[in-house]
Image (cartoon, rainbow, N blue to C red; front, side, top):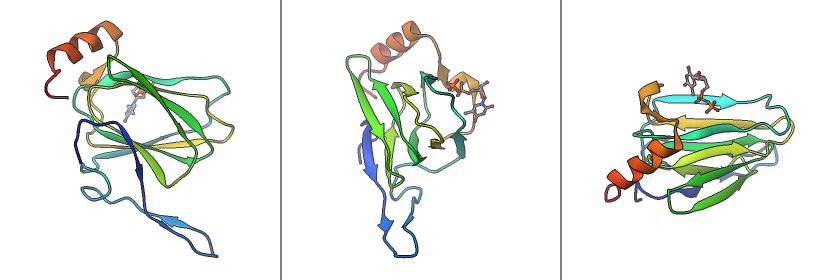
Length: 140
Ligand code: TYD
């Protein structure tokens, strides 16, 4: 799996009349080791989360419950991914500006991250993001 692509990963789903079960294994279903897990919940209607890029962090974003949209921007073009199933994850490599919006009531967003929290990995200014993309064009 190319680490440079932003894409939906379909996770295994074990269907069972007692309730379904899904799985994610590091370096197997996703191309990175999981250093951190966080989740976003109780999002009031109309709120937007994210709105930044990462220099190194790779992530998998999963709508464990409810639905929301993730808009990813690679500098040249934007793409909207609507997440509404707990067995689909959006893989986001480093160097994508991404924001999350249109959260449904009671939605639960889980983020698996390849790094621990490090503020200096964030690019929070869009102009810095474009400069970063231009500088690392061949590598991301
Ligand atoms: P942030 O990632 O900036 O979220 P958003 O882009 O949606 O605003 O995180 C919000 C705050 O939470 C920020 O002050 C940093 C803190 N935070 C941590 O301390 N550890 C973490 O793992 C994360 C994701 C955020």
